[in-house]
Length: 423
Image (cartoon, rainbow, N blue to C red; front, side, top):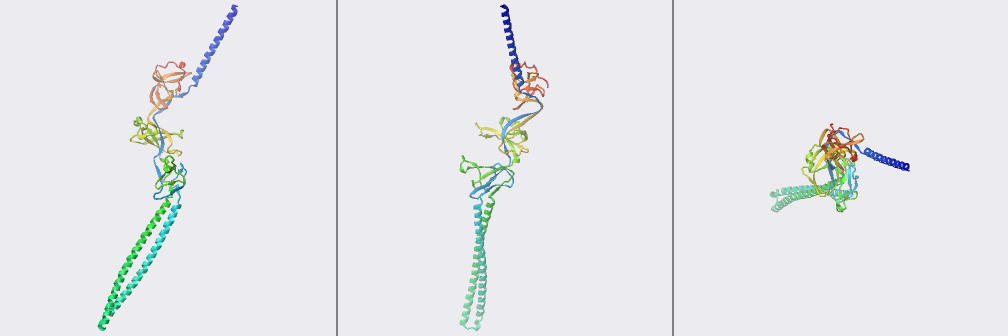
């Protein structure tokens, strides 16, 4: 009986030992798996860039606007380049309906021809009148000379005949004076009429040339190479504003489109007031356009606004500086208005040890990293030299050291080392 009890107790003890061992093995296996699954990063040795991270957008330093021609009424768009398409210098991008202007040009041309015909007729009539006046003047002069000759015979003629001759001479001389005065009057009237017709002709020609120039303005050409962006048409009200399109009417002088020069793209960055003293003109910039995150473009700051500018894009409104960095050369795929991020290089630290920001932890109120040593992670205190949003420059570990990006299990982490490692 006692033997059976002893055997049962022994079996129970063995079962308990097996269960305890299995639990310990499972716990160790899980811990090992957790340690193996920790993300790691290698400490990098090299130049460390102290950055001021900003956001902004691409803008064109040089852009030109296209406006509807002045003094032209009833402008209707009948053809235009596709919105956002690339255009070349001299290319027709907007064409207005020219039918009314052509009709007006025909009317102006008809008016010029009519006035010119009237002027030619007046000139011909003036020459005819002048010739007739010359003939009448010659006749009057001849009559005067003949009357004077008759009057000279007074000595051999009777007194009555002599008086008649003197009267005839006086009448002939009076007719001659009247003829001369009539010639002057006819000449002045003809000159005034011709001058008036010439002014009317010149005025009609001026209007015709103006209409010709209006007809030439029915086509708007691009002044430079770039992309075309159409401005909003507010003719239907602010709430219904849409970019100009085919069929829309435009007022004289109204701005219809804007063409930015893609070769002058700049990164416009919003600089907080606390960061203004960290940068200056000539500071290097690393630009990352949201649409092309794989490409990093170097640039340099060319200008900074002297005063802060207020922005109402967020509430409450903020005030900040604006810095502009020229892209040399810009990517042909980029367009003004694209959102982008810019890292402004505040300082460069050569031959620094840098780790990801996620690899830095706080132990006992001091910065530290978990260095992978064998199958364990040893907490190692480090000294922070500089920080960036993504990286930290530190002292206390060597280049190539594997550090954990997440904190290992608490019971696995041993006590930290008493002092930092040497490089």
